[in-house]
Length: 210
Image (tube, rainbow, N blue to C red):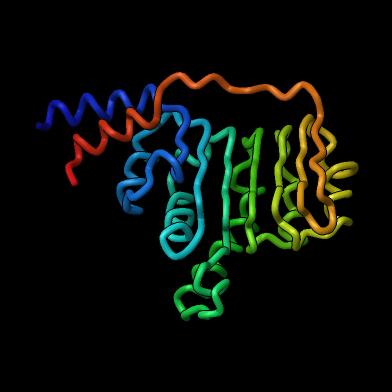
């Protein structure tokens, strides 16, 4: 009923601060995921898989939400990855356009999400040296993880580690280029989770219907 739906959205908007889309929202449509993201006004931590057409569409549309401007911790995985291409099937015109748009999102990320404290871009084929080097412009960044991006050169890794991002307290570049070990600094803080996003997702599903 309308009252129950209002109560659910009130709870989500005030209590949900962390969402892991790949694990907690598996099987959800892009529309339903965006509905939850947009309702969670206090969202501070978001994990998104950008793999394939579904994932790239979710990432692109999520960046239009105002809540993205309040995130402190963001994890994007598999941006630019496409299983059909990896299998030798090639990409359609729309998939090429999606991948170009994902690369544009990564390019604009340092300017749009200046409030980020922690950023993870894991196994993202769309990430290249030029895009990675731009991450140095994030003024509040203290934790950075680029694990699994073999296309990133050692020169850029060194730039990010030693020169451009002087405020980093923790950094990990495992499997970037020929680097197989992660670089980690002490004193990494963790954010408490005030509410269960999995429970909230279930409530949203009950309120919105199938």
